[in-house]
Length: 489
Image (cartoon, rainbow, N blue to C red; front, side, top):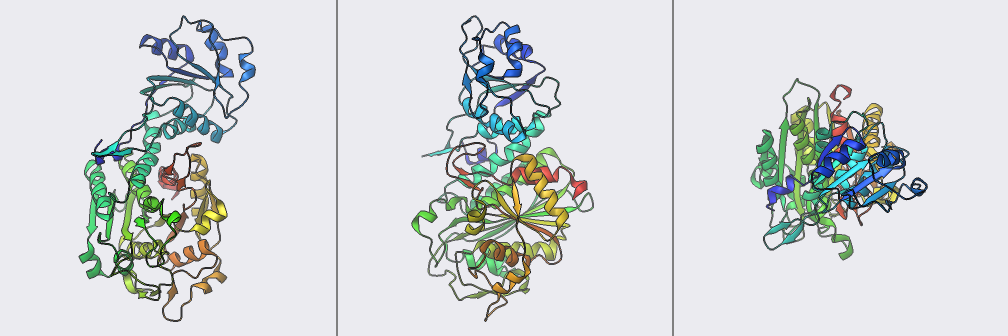
């Protein structure tokens, strides 16, 4: 499994059947069914197809969180296992059910799923997300672990469903997970540049890369400061899909700290273990433009990846340093080198404002522990002064099972950013998620702008629901769902 395959994560070969009888007939004729998942609404159709179940089977299907084994006294049909589920009550429950079925199908040949729902998109999303397993690392590179079911047949009962489109959108989350889960001894800023080039080549995207010499020549003081302590120098990448005038120009910026020691303000050892995923924001926006181009969405999209490794060494930036992010619009006193994400984002946001003329500017970052404390692991923080943009992004998140809670850009807290020796203090240590967002707002000019702090849901500590251990790709499906409706941007 070469590194390039990280950009093409395996998913089950998903097809549809108009009803359960057709699904059973087709699948049985091709060598049998390893797992059949049905809800109570389909039990009669199962009986009509000649699959006998015990009396009272419908009464077992009451718990939406379980797959209930239904013993088949009739072994004449080539179905290895029948599992029953309660009919999901809403889209989120349907998505969770899909994830359970996706997990249960790992390494199986053929799965059939028959669940009553008017909209089956959440079920497909769950099947794809639940079937994901992070690639393990062997001596020669990534090694596949458990694989999703080779084939899954979804019974539609007449519901409209564009399977390929939903799989393409959902797979963006898997691409982001693969990138963010790659160990940091392999993944540095240049490694991310190479992945970006692969995306650009396979999708026909325009790409531009800044190395450390160009960053210095053009005044990207934030990236140079944060990346200065590492032997693996910083980079900035821009990719573009579409052309000016086709639709509103959306610019996405993703935090790309490929490993975060905290710098001179070094993190505790336990806090460093998960820091390979501190570039999840850049992984998300790279996966988004990859999917936008794959689907040929009618949107003019640019993404910026400010990439650096926050290490400590002889050239590390220090507490009390004063730096000037791109454009010189603000100087920044460094009071904590572990508040580095907002510094590299400042470079990219200011560049976007000065040169890309975005109609909308959105940044995505695993930015603050404060957001994780406030909202825990299942919800991200959303900041924007634009009510319409807040509603658009929140609705897109709700539609994909990635919820956001809008937090205030409270003007009174802006005073905390004051510094005696510079325009801004990078880490005042008060109301951390809000002051971080207020800091970023200083670099976006008058653009429509939103900040997504995914520090909580961007990582998972276990395999549960839609998530798997490590990076979650949180935000990718939100942004794609939002971009699918460019007329509303």
